[in-house]
Length: 167
Image (spheres, rainbow, N blue to C red):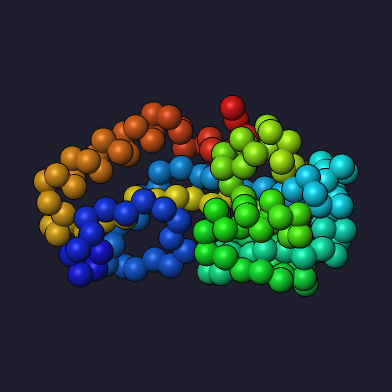
C-alpha cells in the first residue's frame, strides 16, 4: 500500500502507520472455544479462566493488544497461527483451546462441533478498518468505493453496536 500497489485494504491492523488513513468499519467479538472432542466441551458456558489456562492453547502469531489480558494468563500456548482458519483447525482437533470470531465459529457451534468456554468472561473485541493512502494519493475510484463501503457499514453498524452475538 505504501508503494502504491494496493489502493484499499480491509482488516485488523494492530500497527498504525501515520501516512495511511484508518477508517473504522465494525467491531468483531472473539470468544474462546473448544471442540466436541475436548474434555471441557460438556461443561462449556461456565469454564473459569483458571481452569482453561490448564489446557493447551492456540494463539495468534502476531501481537493482539485487545487480548493481552488473556495472553498473560495462559501458560500453555503450544501452537501459534496467523489466520482464523488454522486456529479453527487446531481447535477442531480437540487438542487446543482458542479464540475465534463469533460470526466465523457460529456455523460450527450450530452443528455442535465447537462451543464457547465462557462467553461472559472469555472474549475480546477487535476493530476492523478500511485503510487507504492519504489524499491526494487516493484515486477517484478508490474514493468513491471507500465512501460506499463506509456508508454501508455505518448503516448496518451504528457506532455503539458491535458485530458479536447478535443474530
